Length: 461
Image (cartoon, one colour):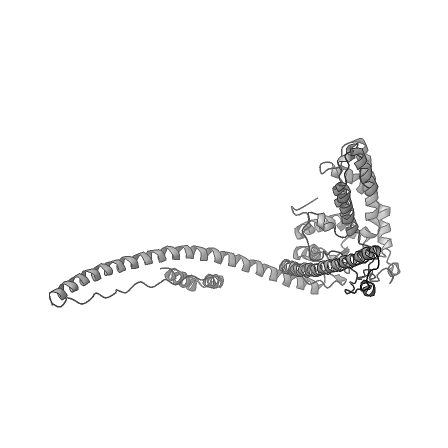
């Protein structure tokens, strides 16, 4: 058994697994080639794994993308049996002892694994997928047909989506709570009538609030990500808002409102009709504002999704550096073309890693040079300041002599002191200089390396 801290498999774990698999099958193969069928996971075409397969007569065949539900025996037969066995063993264990945890997980899973991975089930998995005995007719065109488009987009007033219903239930509970009566028993009865899923006031379930009930219900809907601790992804989205068309402001009873009322009753009816028109107009204005606000929110959400998708693609692109481009088709991973592509991809990955290391080293040396430059620049400014102060004193003496000579109608004894030359500012170090130095060092030119180092020091002197 093996693991890594992130919880996912890796190239090293793949090589260790292949070594163990080869050890258990080498005697049965009797110096013949072995066929190992895998999916397109990146850990299945690393340099170490393919190199080991090459050297030990192992042919690795990769499933086409999105086809393991048809071709892979684990998905077709074994996992369904394993799930049932695992559920049974968990029930048996928890009936007679504590709950399943990380401490006792392996002992329970071992029993389920033994029940599922029997010789008969494994042979049935290979036969069901048409691998052994070889039978291409086991996989039909219907089984490999693309999934049908079932999602629709409409603005008709259809039934609300399940997440919206859950929020409606929460709002209904909030409204029922506002109408709370003094009698607690009566309040509970009202809640049960308004919200049928409200628990009774007695027993341990009484503390399970409707809000918790609503949040748990949201976990089984399309927007479960809203109540999940997992980070949001650009592929997650809210249900489309279903709205109705808002008709323009039209006074349908304008002729009636223009008549003069003959009685007090007609006057009351006309006043009520006018008020009704005003309420309808106000509601339409509110609906227009809400829909406009929803459009702005949708624009904001789509913009944020685009930015999130950009970050995901950038991160994914960085993670894919040095990996072979898998086109999703079935292929023999151990053939020369794929093996050479993996070698080239590994070289690109190693070069990118080395370049990153050089950049980090260059930044460290650049930071050190900047500290030296700052200290020497401060010393230079201090020396220039002292020179300038001495010159200012000499100018002050000269001005005193000049004023004295003018009062006696004489000429000054010497000319005005000139500003002495100041030390020029030191050239500021650049990161590019240190990156170039690293490249020169890699070429192995010792003399050039020494000159570069002296040049770098002279820049900061």
